[in-house]
Length: 149
Image (cartoon, rainbow, N blue to C red):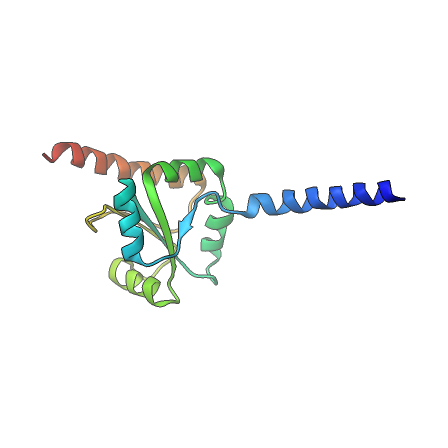
């Protein structure tokens, strides 16, 4: 009887871990102030990636589940970006959307540590397309950075 209980408990724990594991995002998003994430990007010598989203937005939730949860996306982004996310229904997100957006979300903004906007990616996309969009921004940034003395 005790053996059966232990196996059931073990199987239950494995099932919960398996179900919850893929839902946890591989991309690590900061939620602190924009000044704080900018300082983090400066310290780490990375670009700043900002995700503007809303809880009620189906494409935003799809990106969270299908793109940001992927290990390869998380690894890729961690190598070049400090990532932050702001809800457009709150002050910071609303202000950023007002300044850099056209009203539609999800909206992804890429800044350098001086606060210059280098890229914007609008809408949801499959992981490879999303990473290709990021690579395009990074290529342009890297070329310009090499050109500057």
